[in-house]
Image (tube, rainbow, N blue to C red; front, top):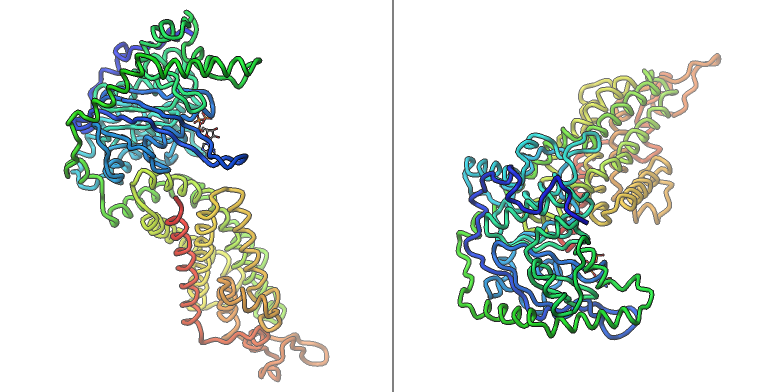
Length: 631
Ligand SMILES: Nc1ncnc2c1ncn2[C@@H]1O[C@H](COP(=O)(O)OP(=O)(O)OP(=O)(O)O)[C@@H](O)[C@H]1O
C-alpha cells in the first residue's frame, strides 16, 4: 500500500506541525529505556509446565525515539507492553531507565500508559479534559502555568480548533475517533512524563486517522525528547514509516529489533528475503511471521524458527546486546530529585474537589447521569399523583394510601438501576486513572457521594412536591418534610447499593440484574407484602432488619397514619368501620389502628434514622472496599 497522496510520512511537511511545543513536556533527564532477556509465562491449562508467552526480549529505545511493537494477534505485544510499563505482574528482569532500575513509584512518576480504549468523559470539552487532567496530576503549579500547559498541548496535538468542543456523549456528537485518541494521549502526557507507553493507539481508526495520531506522537517525541513505545496492529505504509524502531514479535519471540529504515537491508542480507516494492512492509512482515493461516503448518513453523534463529545470530542482535550493556554501564544513573516528582501528588482534599467539579460538569451536561432520572421521577410523580388523586380522609383511602407509600418508596429505590450506566462510566474512568496513579478508592468514593447527594435531594423534593399534595397525604408542613427526608434517605441507600454492586461486577447487564434482584428482595421483605408479625423467621431475622426499604416504608406509614383520623362509612343502619379503634363510637378510625396491624409505633424515628444512616454508610464502605481491593 502506498501512502495516501493527501498525507505524507514526513512530519515536517504539514504546516500545523510547525506550531510551538509545550516546554514543560521537555525531557532532560531520561536518556534511554532498556530491557534485557525479558521472559514471561502463564500457567498452562493442558500441562503442569507453564506456557511461555514471551521469550528473552531485549531492547533499547533512546530519548526522542518512537518504537513500534508489532506482531500477529497473540504474539505477546500486550504482555511485553505491560511488563515494560510495570503495570501488571512484576517484571522478572528489571526495566531500566538510563541503565538503572527505579523503585516502582518513581518509575510511575516519569512514565505514562495510554490505554487502547479512550478514558475520556464525553460531557467535557477538550480544554476542560486537559485542565482536569492537569489538576488531578499536579496541584502545585500556578493557574497561569497550568493554562499555558493546556494551550501548549492543544497546539502540540492539533486540537486548538476543537478546544471548546465536547468530547461527545450519547446525545451530542463531538470529536472524531482520531481526535479523541489524540486527546487521550495529550491528557496522559500533561504531567510531562519522559516515557509514554501506548496500547494500539491506532486501533479502530482509518488509515488517515491512525497516521495522524502517530504523526503527532512522533512530533512530540522529537520536539520534547520523549521515549515512546506503542504496540501496533497493522499500520498503513505511511504510518509504519513514521516509527523510528520496530520490534517484530511472533509467538513471544523476537524476529527483529532495530531501525525501521534498516529492515530492507536486514531481511535481504541476513535472511535472503527481499522486501517487495509496492507492498505495505508492515503487512508483508506480518505475513512472514504469522503461521496461523499457513496451508503447510510444518513448513511454515520451520521457516518461522529459522527466522527467529537468524535474529538471535544476527549482527544487529549482537550490537543491540552491546548497546543495552553499554547503557547499563554508562554511568549515567538516574537519580530523581524532588523536581521530577513533587508536582505529581496533589493532596486528598484537592483531588476530591477536582473530581467533584469534574463530575458536577458531567452531571448537568450529560443527561444520562441525572437528567434522565430526574425526568423519569418527575413523570412517575405526575403519574402517581394523578392515579392516587385527591384521596379524602376516609376509610376507603386507607388501603390506597398504604399502597401508594409502598409503591412510591419501593419503585423509587428500584429505579435507581437507571444509575448503573452512568456509574459504570465513572468506574471505568476511575480504574484507568487509578492505574496511572492519579487517585484511589477514597477520593472516588467521597467525590461520588458528594456529587450525587444534592441531585438525590432535588429528586426527593421534586417528586414529593408533585405527588404528596396531589394525593392528599397528611396536609401538614411537618409531615411533608418528614416524607421528603425519608425519600431522600431511601434514594441515598438505593444509590449506595448501585455503587456497591456495580463496583463488584462492573458489567452493565450483571450490575443491572443484581441491583434489580436485590431491590426485589428488599421490596418483598420490607413489611408491606407480608406484615412483620406474619413474615417467617428466616426472612425476618436474616434480611428484614437490614432492609433499608423496611425503615422507609415503616416511617412513611407512621408519618401518614399516627396522627390522622379517617371517617368510617355511613350505612343505612348507622356506621361501618373497617378498623375498630377507640374512635369507633364517633364513626371514625384513629390512624394508629392501621399501624397496629403492622406492629408500627411512633417515637422511634431517631433510632431508625441511625440504622438507615448505618446502612447508607455500610453500602458506601462496601463499595469503597471493593474499589480498594480490586487491582
Ligand atoms: N493471563 C494469561 N493467562 C493465559 N494466557 C495468557 C495470559 N495473558 C496472555 N496470554 C496468552 O499469551 C499470548 C500473548 O498474549 P498478548 O495479549 O500479549 O498478545 P497480543 O499480541 O497483544 O495479542 P492481540 O494483538 O490479539 O491483542 C496469547 O496467546 C494469550 O492467550
